[in-house]
Image (cartoon, rainbow, N blue to C red; front, side):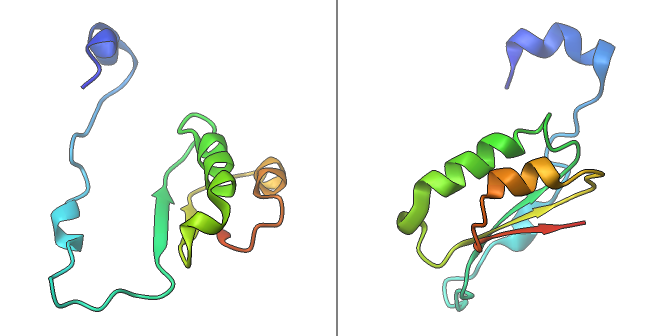
Length: 96
């Protein structure tokens, strides 16, 4: 999906397309929706993967996000900068 990076991809790393079988998480039409609902981010390193952008966007959504919560999961040796970006928002949770 990123033709500009295709030439460099082999030099710097590998890509695992569809590494997580997301089809296993599909809800059935009759499945009850959990409350609160979660947006889940899983990964490391957080800066490279844009968690700072995610946290900023999440806070900007404010009341429009309803009962949704954001869970950020992954190794982070120094969480202080991320806690500052969280700005005390109780709808954001960090997990190791």
